[in-house]
Image 1: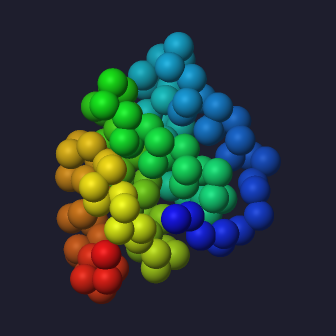
Image 2 (image 1 turned 60 degrees about the vertical axis):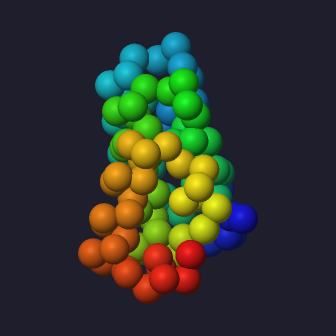
Length: 110
C-alpha cells in the first residue's frame, strides 16, 4: 500500500527514469536513488520499492533505495509492513536501523 502524500513531482520523474534504467551506469542510478529520498511522490516510493525488491539489481543501488525509503518513512511517519518481507537484505540493512533510531514506533506498528 502506498500513501498519497503529495502530487507527482515532475523533477523526480527524471531521477526515477535513471533509477529504473538498467542500462545507466551504477553510480548514476545510485545517485538518483539517493536524491529520491527527498521526495514524497508516490511514484518515487513505488520505484524505490521496486528496485529494492529486485533480486537481480545491483546491491549498491538496492542499499541506497533502502536508505531513501528510510528517509521517507522517518519524514512521513509511514512504513508499509509489506516492505519488510519484499525488500532485499541490502535495503533492509539500511532501512531498519535508520527507522529504529529515528522512529521506532513505525517498526512496532509494522
